[in-house]
Length: 322
Image (tube, rainbow, N blue to C red; front, side):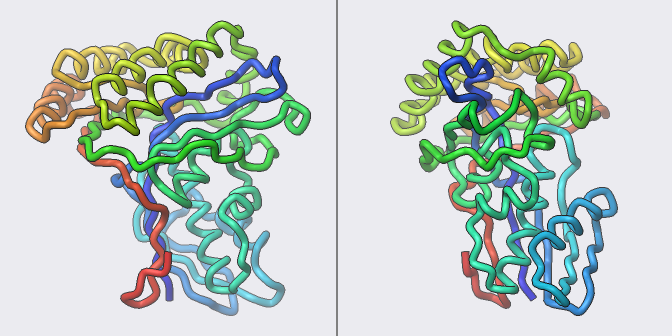
């Protein structure tokens, strides 16, 4: 029996949704400790998935793509968060299942290989690399010659993007506002990419500059003010601006309230509805959460968490092996 626990992630930006200079996609994001995902698995004569009827068929497809012939596995999903809220839950869940097969049967595949087999990582590499290493991540996207058109990871067949930058994230408090509902996904998400890409090149330059010259140095220098300004800047340009335009008024009100309550930056994770902000004060973080809860009422919740600066944990008995 092994147990795998992995983080979720914030997706802060798709960098180049233009592709004129030979690469497309690229992403910036962050692994977060909670809400997480946990599964248990053991060898078996059959393939059995329990605890997650929504993802069961996708998990079985991933398992069948990896399992040696005449082999099986029993997997129990202990807990996971809701799908399609901007935290990358689907990718992390499928990677956990793929990792379970890989480790139990000593397949020796890399995490990017597992991600590709699971059908993930074809647009953003943030979920793949956060599963493996945690921390703050920037990936390099894909050559336009290897990917046909702009599309979300759920339908793209490209191999996961290479890791360009990974750094431990500072010990800041991360405030999550999770309104009820779900973000764009499925066919609607694929249509959104087609309708909104390519993004004008000047906006791509703006996003690139913000990631390279604001977010990355701020993480290295533990500069929450500069990081927050960079997060805010990202919301007003590029693909992010178009994602935010889809959001209901309550999401925009939450972002405004976070900033007014002291959050260093406020942003939308992927297609939302999750909104995130940062504080280096526990008391201030709680005050921000309280002010957001007044807006949410009974139509959502807040979570205060921190970054996860390590990859998924794999435990056999009482011994951590990853």
